[in-house]
Length: 609
Image (cartoon, rainbow, N blue to C red; front, side, top):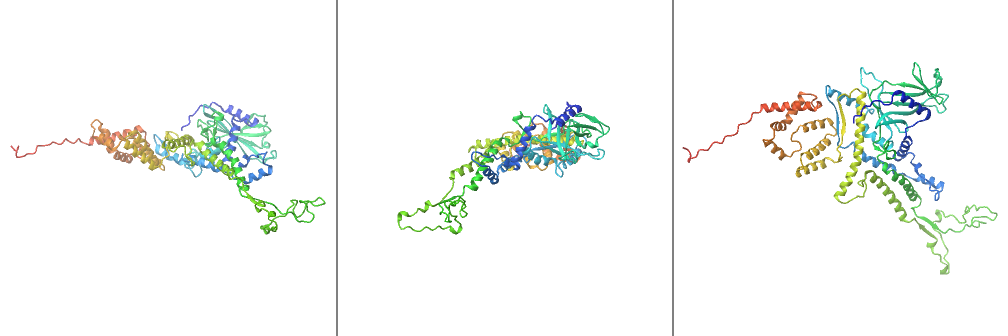
């Protein structure tokens, strides 16, 4: 969607004063702690890096050593669950949306081709569309409060166009920004770089990039030894080479890039799902509603792993023979030492050579020992293990259910009725539609910024159009819907809508072909009508002849216009309509009405005279 250019309410002097606060006092935007905490948590849940830190020791029942052992034995499943959830959102870029990218006016076809060329290298060897289809979703999973800045390197504007590219800013790096009426006023990004000077023990310097609505400022730490000008603490001091800033005994140099004059900050936050905790001022991941269940599953799954590893297999319980070492009495020696044979246990070890233990048969039957009471194998109650297993399974299914308000992705179903299944499916599509709107807004922002920087925004029309019902149907389902609509005679509007969905799916890999189909269909006067309705309209004298001619000659008219005008489909709608009407009138003038047939009486012997 086209970003609205705003008058810069924050002038350069105000921006620089705010930058001094960020550098000298560590000023941050109001939600910095919240956004960075979420980023750290989401990264653990998605990548597994640092996931063990989410485990907690149950002090009353678990020693420190036992906890360390549990951590080592735990195989986390939350990364698999989050991947399964996010995989569903990849249906959005694969859906049959309409991609509109065209220029209107003079040289429109050339400008569109050039813009497509600039966009083709937006993400290295991949194009802008691929960046939004993949990287944008990945960042939503791990850091929705990060930003993507559209930048471009220096270029010769006399011979070439700018080649914009995405610069990803994490929520940790986006230290300060401000919105007014939902419009970004500025963004300050803090990064680090190698600065090997004697005054710095860590050999790391700070860099601050300040993105404004028409220009970008860069404040980089430098070696104080290179500055000969007298500096004042926390004030910019101008020199013939630029401006210096002294703050907390560190020296910075300010540089200004050539103004881009885009009229807006060339940055957009990654997220699309607003965070209620910050009253919608920041964003959360698409699976955020499942985070409490994911955290709970970390603990439960860990306990199941330790149960399966150490307790599920049967334990051997048996009486052991007394240690036969000289002087051993219950593991202790007469002088107080520990028996070296039994190591203080008081009984002999049973090795593999003693798998069979022999007992002398007593003479008296009453002295016979019940062998079941000497050796027995015991396992934990299976109900406990089954409960833990079911609990982990329920939590996993619950994560998907709360994200999509649906149980379509588990073995459970909310209802066995057709109505219940339709409701379940609609809930999933409602969730994905929110993502689709964010997807379309992000794509539009990147395209418009790219066009602005490449000087190709004049006459541009760029947007993605998703159906509000967001039906994720395949070709066979859509054809069945079309046939059912025609049988039930629901009306041309519904039939045209389904036909449009079929065309989007057919030409999903070729937007130009879809655009041509849509133009032809928009000028079809009987679009969406059944064959019987069209036949009736053609024979009805009340229907104007120009509509009948347009329908019958539509294919020929478009073929001729395509040959006569190379960029016919790029023309304004009013111009296309004018050319089509001229063709229709030409065919109507060439066609002469056929005189009605005259029926003559047939001569018979009775009336021959």
